[in-house]
Length: 111
Image (cartoon, rainbow, N blue to C red; front, top):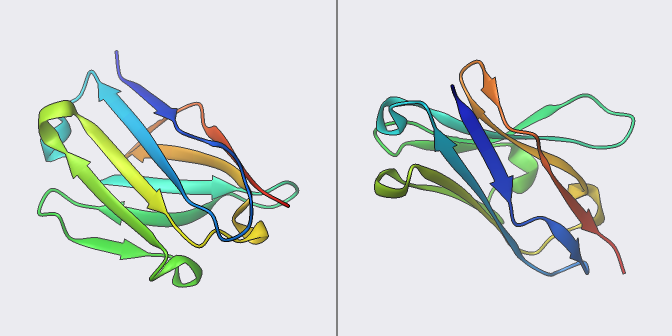
């Protein structure tokens, strides 16, 4: 049974930082491309970042230079370091492994 469990969300002021984690089980983690998505209230879910098995990465244009995705295969965990957060980064952040999704973690950027 595949499980993806996100953590690390919360309330942060504009300009602040958060680090999200997604712990995976039930998959051979090192072989999977891992992705982060987010969904703001009233909007569609959108791609944020990915990291493949070769540690290649890509990002949504609006988060380039502010967010960093990384992975630790020994811990079966993918991370999303988010710096210089803006109110428009608010949403539920989801971890994805192909067809598998986590339950999401809420990120709220507000003063």
